[in-house]
Structure formats: C-alpha cells, structure tokens
Length: 233
Image (cartoon, rainbow, N blue to C red; front, side):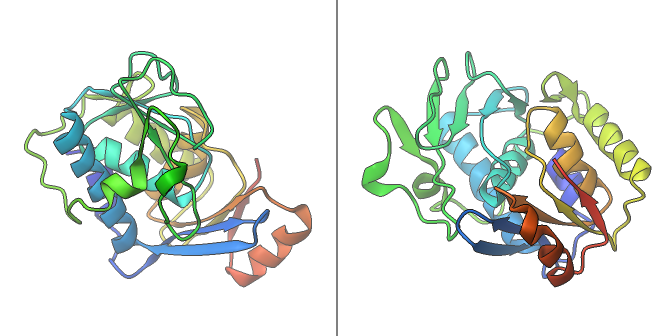
C-alpha cells in the first residue's frame, strides 16, 4: 500500500486537515481531508497518465511549504514515486514559476496561488502548468501497480522506513489524532518533510502551516486555530 493511502486512511472526509496561512499576502486556505485527497488523486493520475510514472520513478519537489505542495507530495507517493531534491535525472520536477528544473525530463511549474488558479500565459517557457494540467484529471486514483513497502519513497528511504520515521517523530512530540499543530517549518527534502508534514499526518493530526511567518501574528494564529502544538522553523 502506498504511503499516501496509509496516511490518509484514518481521516474522515470532512475533517480540516491542512490550514495554510501566508502572512506575506494575508491569505488563509483550509483543506478538508477529502479536498486534499482529491488534489493528490489528480496529481497521481496526471503523473501516471501523462508521464508514465510507476513505482520507483523519481520526482523532484523544489517547493515551499504550501497546500499545493502537500497535494504534489501525496500524489507522487500515491503512484509510488520517490521524492528527491535534485531535479537532475528526475522524470518530473515540481518548481515555483521562476525556478529552474535543470536536468528533469519535465518541469512542472506550480502557481502557489492561494485560490488554486493556474499560471495561464505566465507559464515559463519550457515548463508545463501543473494546476491547469492536473485539474482535469480524476478525483480518485486507482493504482494499477501495487506499491510495496520496499519501494523508494523519500530521498532513498523506503515507504516502510519513512512511515516508521514519521511515527517515531510523532511519538516524540506526543502528537495524537486530536492534536492541532502550528508549524512554520519549510518542507526541505527529506528532513523538513518528515518533521513538518509527515509526523503530523502519521499521528492522524491536523496541520496549520504558516508561510512567510510574521512573528507578531503567530500568537493570533494559535488562538484562532485552537493550536495545541507549535513547531517553529
């Protein structure tokens, strides 16, 4: 079973799973477990149907901590891809609009727009618009190829290894399903993803991710979102 299926299985569809703040723009976006699952499914379908990805294929993710990044990561893992930091030799590299994906077979520019708008005419030359291309794909993913626990998943670590590491970190932080975690950590590969995202999901908890965090607003976010655990980057 893929890492994504294991992580998302305990969540009820309507439960808020990721709430994303960008203090630089003042935006707030809340995704339920069902909505995040849909984004992950669209991503997995796009990767398989348009780029022939299969378990063990390499996908580079060079994105900030963002709700769209969560959809990218979970979609990649759902179809069995290995998430890496280096675009060289990757089948697909997910990058912000102005970044380079040198060496990847396909550069997928991610808009990072708070409302999920695509790039349209602003898509960089030589790249594809991830939001525009993936949103037309199905809201569910039916894997044709199983993803064994020994499949490389994150920077060389297998599905089984990553899941065990995420659960250990959740236990150290005393995270439980009722936890509401505020984080300002970036999702670097692999450490930031393990600590900032996967430990939360492994506990069945919910995440309040704050990008471009304004220190003067952190306490307000804690109170507004009924945060029980804080992890600052």
